[in-house]
Image 1 (cartoon, rainbow, N blue to C red):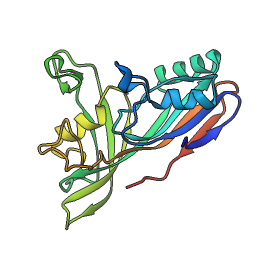
Image 2 (image 1 turned 90 degrees about the vertical axis):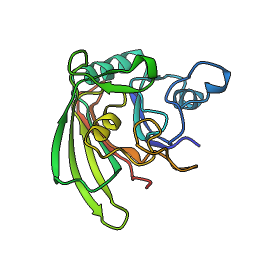
Image 3 (image 1 turned 60 degrees about the vertical axis):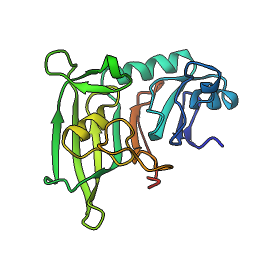
Image 4 (image 1 turned 135 degrees about the horizontal axis):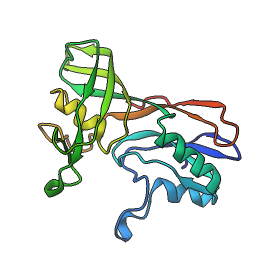
Length: 207
């Protein structure tokens, strides 16, 4: 069932579940995805950005090519605000901070990304501790990416020594069977593709 969070004649915001592709992958077994599900109900909806398959949360699609282009420009010009919530392994020492580490695809091990000071593209993430759980030795954090590199939040938190719980690529130990990646796109703000007015949408964190 499609979880529509906000909609008008220019855009639609949906809540993507963990485990669902944003767009079709290669092969007949990877055709079920968020964009296909949305387009079955709203044929004019066009993809603007993506979330990792394992990540849940808010995605905006443009309704029609002009709306898609306007939203695409907003992303390119960093006029879109994104806030994620995650649970990471370990107890973060600082209540807030910034990770500024350049990222590039680790080609022999793709889709993994890696930090490369020589070849990586600039990548910045701000983090804020929400709470610490001494019993489980885990920390709940709010993550605000400045850039939008592939796997950015996952690599940056792992680089801090605090990988996101359930991360099959960057955690030191593989997730338990059935354990999802604890990363959720909880808030999205963007200029309305037609009027330019600010739109802010929020989604409850499911973990």
